[in-house]
Image (cartoon, rainbow, N blue to C red; front, side, top):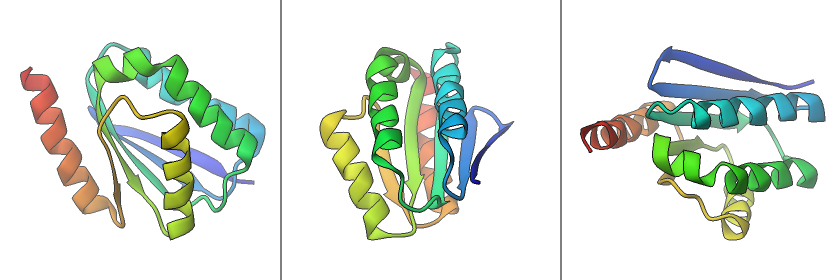
Length: 131
């Protein structure tokens, strides 16, 4: 079964890496962790490497929508941005569908690899921390 790896070693640049398709318990653990980051009260940005996740079931996609709506103000206040790393057009399409239902309160950009994603986020972090 899949898992989500969380990495805070370069805080305030956070990293999440999906490894395989998660069961519902792991998915809920990951939603809880994302909510905890958003509610800490500290500025941060997050790289979400989803190249290894595959197709996320509808109930789990719904969990992302619910989380965005629940933590919208915390995200807007604390998160400088999110960089999504996808391996396929299908993954990008699923994100597009999620963002139609729950528009992101933060800047989000899709990338094909980690280095440009991190560079973009570091710029957003500088702006957020300066304001």
